[in-house]
Picture 1 (cartoon, rainbow, N blue to C red):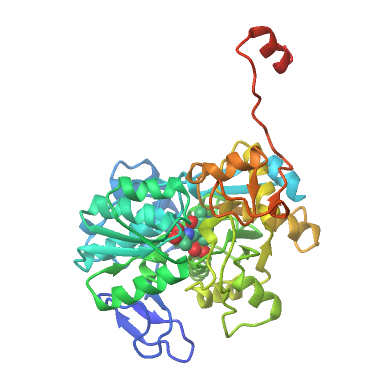
Picture 2: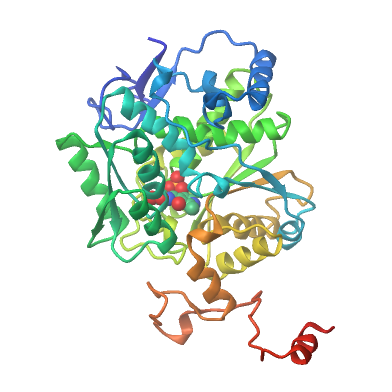
Length: 445
Ligand code: F0G
């Protein structure tokens, strides 16, 4: 078998056929990878092929995921591909963000410019293809909003029922609106993401539902292409550091796997360092990293952050994320405060690039790492922006109106003045009379 499921547990490593509908190793309960016996591939020939497909009109060539199909070769029948032309996201030079971080140059790869506005589309493209291969009629996920939006869209295209489990009242409206519009059965669970995740995992094991959270290793195969495409955009010159937000820790795991495979296949000649950044109120991996704990998850009981996408205390892929940090030696996992996230988001915005709060942890983290001397100002650093600004406009407007409160769950709920986030880089709207002279005065004309 050239593609197979394999337990990541070093003491187990058991292999299973890819048509098994399993999310954990049946022997030891470990997480699973999709692994391959890659045929002998000539690196330059592969790079040429990836590049040539950019000018092709065939849908699977136009997809920024399936364009790299030699590196995700698990599908037996290409008719199971459902594409929204995901991936193909730009890498921007961001001078104001670079200067804020203390770097000479900073690149932002904007995964928020995907069809449903987040990086989840890369993984959903492969997840839904596997669901189709298995003959699934219904797919499910727990979500802080982006996975559900993406799954709802791909399931609609594939003609499958989508069941999304979201923590009631805790996801941004932009994301909720998507799963409603794409026709998903949207279940608002009375509890947090971690509870919703546990529920949907159990239900998927007991029923026909096919689980499309990132615990499903086929999702991560698609997310690998974020790193592969980035390397291609860097002309296969490996950046010094790649910085990603950390929530359920699927994305960092996938990026690490992609880099390791590209290295193994000779597409790159060294590994970059990777940094995973978490919000301080949802920081299980950052805590483990700083305490040197590697074997037991330091779960956060009641995760809290206004970056709701990463409000997760019990991430399913923590072992894979640690493995990725191990592969990309010299990086680490760090946390940033709510104030740092909010300010970093406004700075990214000032570069003309909109992101949702969870994406901005990257810039906040880089800034701290530069000021503490871990990253040198000359280094080539790339941050992955994971979601679009329009996913959560409330957060942005509240920041610029100077009314963003750290512990509030909703726009109108204010916990206490001490929880106020300072609008250090606010661009306040100006109330002005509908009168030309006054407007001229305001604009300095
Ligand atoms: N950024 C955004 C915008 C996200 O939506 C997520 C995760 C992350 C970062 C973290 O990525 O989980 O792979 O470590 N969102 C998931 C969801 C949990 O349900 O949409 P991760």
